[in-house]
Image 1 (cartoon, rainbow, N blue to C red):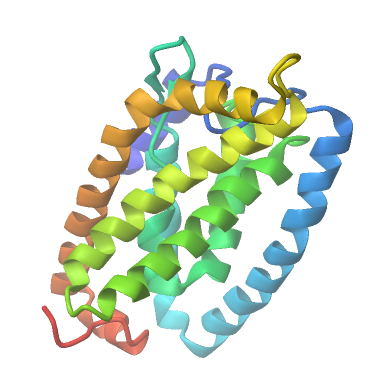
Image 2 (spheres, helix red, strand yellow):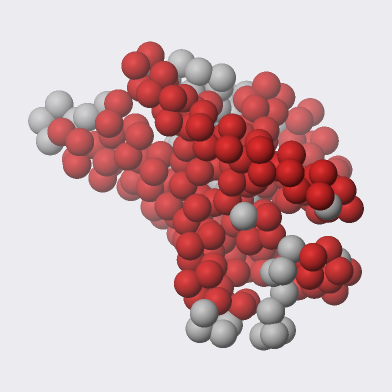
Length: 239
């Protein structure tokens, strides 16, 4: 994972209008709007992150792993059918381990480093990117996970949480772009369908792949980090 991260930083730092909305792409009013929406979530998550690191300092390595997992997956650019790019988000796994508020902070930090080091996204559009990838994605994953966990199948819950959070992130980005750039004749809905269509073909298999990969990493964590997961009360009786 470290080697892949180094390659992404050194070998692929090219601008991309992918799920991360590019620097300067949004009109100023929309860039400010999404910053104002995202900031309270980030500050609340920062409080949660500070608390958990003080109460459970042994979990810092697991926090770093969740952040690295998100960084690597969301930095993997895959060309889309229209010449744009798609990629996984990686936020589902961290959400299942630590919850959505902490994942908001980790996701925001990932977006910051990617905008600076990889030219993915940008500082002005970071509020919009945080909202789609680090707020909507994690909170979707959290809800899906605990909904299906009640059915007694933890592995299915993990897979669906990661996969659906990935898809909803891209749906949110399409909504953001459609609000900023409505179609001249068809308005918001036509623009939304156009933007969503850019990602649809590539993003569905990517979401499935992310779900399977998240499940694979979870199984590895259960084997080697069971004590840490148990301290977070995330291992149930359905192994």
